[in-house]
Image (cartoon, rainbow, N blue to C red; front, side):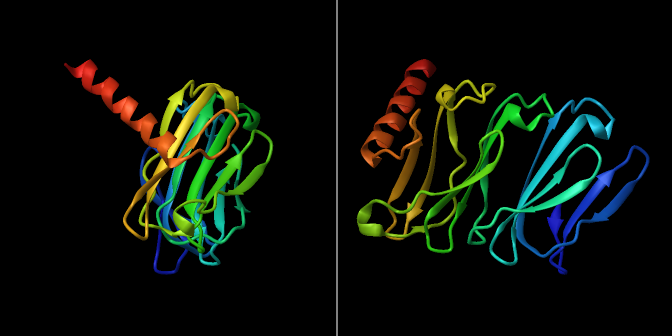
Length: 206
């Protein structure tokens, strides 16, 4: 899926015999994130679910979802920039039930804050992580693909850890590390975590 000059979300798909176009409409900007779940080995469209996330021209995060029978739009709100999105998911992605998974979409807010959209197994929540460091220096550049540690097949929040990084406007790299309490921790703790992982990888390769 991609954006066109009409700013519609456009899908190019193979139906088993030929390629076809599908115009999903709306008004979007930037590149989408797409993931599928359910029985992806099946050719039965009812056996899968597809979720597409993209920035709307109104600055909101938009979701385009396939529920097994039809496509639907969902406006998740917010005010995000056109910087690339990042996502992470954990839980049972073989299931089509929404309460079996958790999804987290990370975006740069129009204010320079780190914004998280979290599917908590029954509803979407938006979390503004702010810029609580370096005297409120704004974020810039692209988010680094989140690093995940723990059991990604378990939807419980205490089963994993994750971190995502991005640059500040003054050039320093900062990280957000998520713990069981789901609280943001200090840069020093994040740095210790990444250095520990690097040492373990180095020793393992020797």
